[in-house]
Length: 223
Image 1 (cartoon, rainbow, N blue to C red):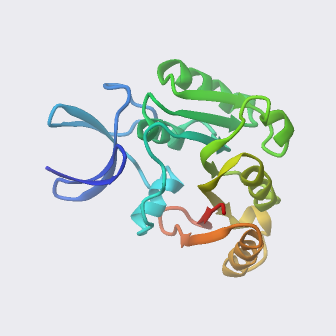
Image 2: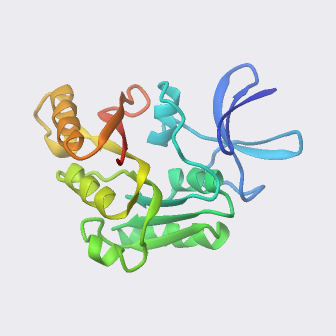
């Protein structure tokens, strides 16, 4: 097996096929049934692009995200914690990921995950209410959003403006059908990118097909 570094604690693994892996912060423990394997005394977790839009973007050729050990991350739309767990691997014990999820049912899974992974801080709340989030989060080095709401772009702009440090990077997993079920996907993406570009510098816009149908990842830099 050969490993090629992508970013902190993330590599491409070559063992007959190419796959993305992250260094497991909690050895021997899985989060969503992902494959675990050892290499040179360390345990890695396969990062499935069909289960994670962040992984899908890297499979589609996105440049490595500016996400590193020790970072504070604000994650909006954390769901049950699949991608959150890989962010947890990346930032390691010196970092923090504030995982915001509006669903109390999904929030239970996040709380259970945070009991094992001590760098995850679950917040059951509404990402639209930045004032309430501000009671737990002051600022972040990296912001990630995966929210299937019609106003998802506005939510992203509001939270990046409020919480992301100047010079920081953020990404939004844009779900086009949640914005307009009848309009052309490309037109929706172009329109939302234009809206975001009025506030922040666009670094990339990546169609996540075939790993994530109807999704694009928009990566920005806050000036």
